[in-house]
Image (cartoon, rainbow, N blue to C red):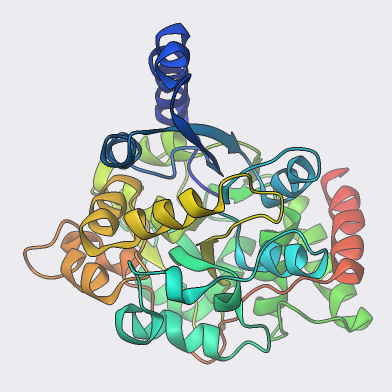
Length: 358
């Protein structure tokens, strides 16, 4: 979900070699430790060092590549703070893996006052109260990155998700069952959380047709280099990655179909097996303040849940004014948050194996 290209690899390796090597091990021996479990390249390193210095502690950072792998690792390992996505938080609650938050201990972020309205709208529509368990960290949506010198906005507005069925363009698509079924279901006018078998079968057929197309390539890793070099005309991307791509390549623009998309939120949660809950709350407060959140958003390039940061980033003097089509997440009536469902997940996983076997 998050950009994990060569930049991320360099950052993780450098952090491992210089930060978590022998010198760091010796430095941390006598210090209190926070075990942070996060996506790769999903936090400004200066926030980690700043928190360590302010509290005279050590942060031990471990990373994961998917919510599913994070959940499996959490079954056997202890972490103090983890940053899963909405549907994964719902699963963790169902499996009694994370703590309920004590909002009296949260001083860095007040949802009623600080949260950007779009995110508040999408969370309010859920029958699952994510805020009982997590403090929003980043949010965004999924859309279409396109080369505006080749693909016209008029065509995108006409075809929306069906632009991926075009024979004209070179297309990059995520090798992701979850994201792919969202596109197919939304293009067909269905809920991305449908449990109606006929609708799921239609979505599978939509994707089978896509997979047979010779102008479509599926990516299991980062597609940033390919898009920056304009090797593809259109691609399925997350909004934060779109901000990064647009900052690297002036020919790229971002479009979100009005037929609906996945609006997601990642949040800071505290596992049930956390060994240092007090320090976990301190860390959550530290990274959730306006100053920290703005630094973090500028580094990671995803949309902040904080209204003050969100608005500042897309103001005329903001860092992402030129990329506001991706950073400014517009929530419409057809957008949804992915929900946890073992039944739907099982079908989608099996169907994706059939689709990718073509």
